[in-house]
Structures are given as C-alpha cells and as structure tokens.
Amino acid sequence: MSFQLNHTIVRVRDKHEAAAFFANILGLPPAAPYGPFLVLEAANHVSLDFADDHGAPVPTHYAFLVTEAEFDQILARITARGLDYWADPFHNQPNAINTKDGGRGVYWDDPNGHNLEIITRPYGSGS
Picture 1 (cartoon, rainbow, N blue to C red):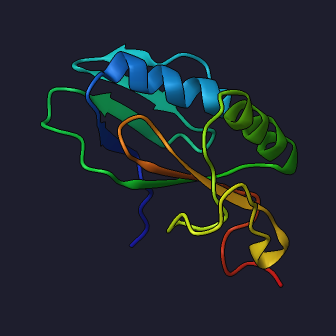
Picture 2 (picture 1 turned 90 degrees about the horizontal axis):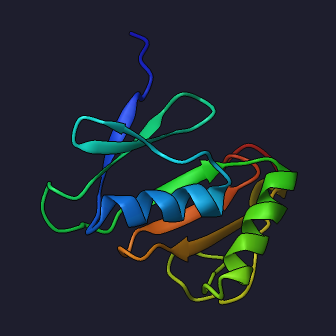
C-alpha cells in the first residue's frame, strides 16, 4: 500500500503568530486560512495546519529537509532573531551545527516549545 503524509495539525497558542514565525524563518509565503486553520504548505505538498482552538500546545518535533542554500538562509534568519540553536535535539551542543550523513543540521525552538530542525541530507543517507 502506498501513502503520503498530507497534513499535520500544529497546536499553538496563537495561530497567526505561530504561522508567521514558521513562514518567516523558513522563507515561505504567508499562511492561507482554511476553516479554523492557517495553512503553510511545504514544497512536497505536505501542509502544516496551525490551530489555536485544539487545546494547549503539546511540544512536538518538526524536521525540514532543505537545500544547502536554504540552510544558510534559514540559519541567518535564526541568528538575526537572536534565537538559540543547537547541533542536537537534546540541546546539549549550543551554537553548533551537526554534519551527520555528510550534510548539515540544526535545531531551535519556536515560541510554543516545538523543537524545529533543518537538515540538508536525510538521516541514514550518507557517510
């Protein structure tokens, strides 16, 4: 059986603030309203549907596969905002980038406590 992830709901305190944060950091167009959600769509057509009416945020991990150029642009926006970032998901290696599988990766938190990650190579794909 073949399937693809279509969307996931991102529980947040303020969907407008959260969707704008993601769009700004990731370099995406503004979110579009759809019913009670604000929707950001990734290049692979998976959407992040921001909701502030589904209960309190539950910190979740979201990882985004990006190009080398996009990595540099996103990291520049993270540092320009003065956000903390780490090379690991447990936040033990501050202000560092990991080089797993011959790519680059970094983690940071959004205002709702979600653990965000950008990587330039999927884990398990390289040296």
